[in-house]
Length: 453
Figure 1 (cartoon, rainbow, N blue to C red):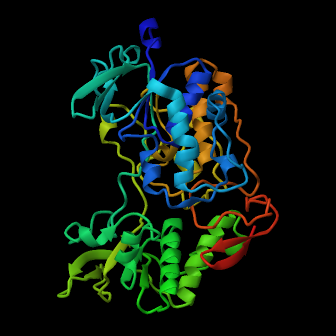
Figure 2: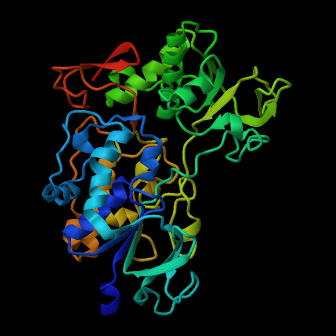
């Protein structure tokens, strides 16, 4: 890379947790970042699940370099043993961090393409000597561009949820029924949202932590109404129920994840939900009364439901990176060196090894997918691991290759995990925080205590 290119900023796509941490790490290394955020404020995706609680405590979701950047602003560090909701994370950390970065964060900047200046994907000549060119649209729709010495894509996967269709494509009729289908965990504390599901029959499609959360929330809604038959869930699983369906329960190395599985099991056992197994949705039809009928690939037709919650995972948007030479795993759409470490058939979030610049590199030098985006279609992501990713990348871009190769993240033997949780804050006087390595504690699922450690 020539001297003029070296003086350009590193463009970071996305002002979410990992994108902002990347900017803080670059500043720590005297490398200038420019963060392009599509939304009107920091962490736009996190704001959409503000009502959902993480199952990592504060001590595991604040990046050390970001903490140093915030310190001179008078920022007050939250209690490291407590667990934030998505809204807490934004209000008490992410937006203050973006504010501290100032003009380095540009809002209403939607990236539409990334390439090498004057070099499309097929051109080899002097490719690595050319800066990157990043095209984006502004708030008024105007087309703009900026040149960069490197690009860190931390845009996440929130914008492309998986469909109900078992083939990976939307089921027939799924788009036409969009007014009765959501792809997010509903905020049942919102009166308008609560009214949408209260006294209704709802299908929940999915088998991960998000589906567990939705089932537990719907069960609590049914209990609050005093009539288990009025508010009822049909839980649709593409596979059968086995010993691992509900996770590890009280023995799970991640207590909140185990508690979520127990809550989903309780919803079924107590009659608030019925489980339908081995069902792959082929079509969504409208009944005469306007309700929805799910039709399986095997011809089964389920009883009509009023609403459908589809929680079948998320996918990366790779469209604006199409002019770059990326090496992605054919199945997960994750960097090829990272994919074996995060294969969901082989690893839980407690067994993924820390990784950095080397595992995240591509044939196109100095372009990186980080955070949730780096995991492609893999279902589980650790916030702490994302922070380690960008620490390593910033060190590499600053020329400190020894630091880039060094692993600075130490995970507890039982593992840690960032993601959506369901349990409440620790009770007054409880100093354990319910963390993975804490002494056994009681986690509260709705009104139901569940033992875990």
